[in-house]
Image (cartoon, rainbow, N blue to C red):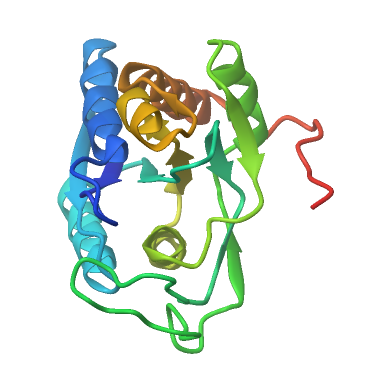
Length: 212
């Protein structure tokens, strides 16, 4: 069972391609004969993790892909690490704006994704979709949910999970003068990430680091 999550719109946007891509990817995975479901999560500190936890209980997945929007990036970003800090530049959709607060009190400083991020990068690149391994998921609700996911999975052995950022959609990118890709390309990338994760026990040993 593959669970995908995407966020509701935030930051003044009327749409969030992370949710549309997650929905479409779930449809494509089902068409391939795989069990998959998509759940929309609120762009709200705390509440987003609660919705995710309920979805984990409902669907009992083997793989979890949480997806969020990173407007301004030009590639699908496989996030490597979630850090235990909320530091919101803008309020969330409930008006919350935590500053230098832990996601989980007394939790570890960070968690690494358990997706085979480098093998997934190669699979997505093979589709012709721009893709990267990212070393930061930010300190907003995306990182909050990513950290919350990995913390929840500590008590659910055998489930692999991680976080993927997607750029603006092509329409949003045009409106903002920023890079954008189609929701269909995002969905295809998510399908490749899900299927590669299902087929890959040990990640590829190839470079995907950064100098800064």
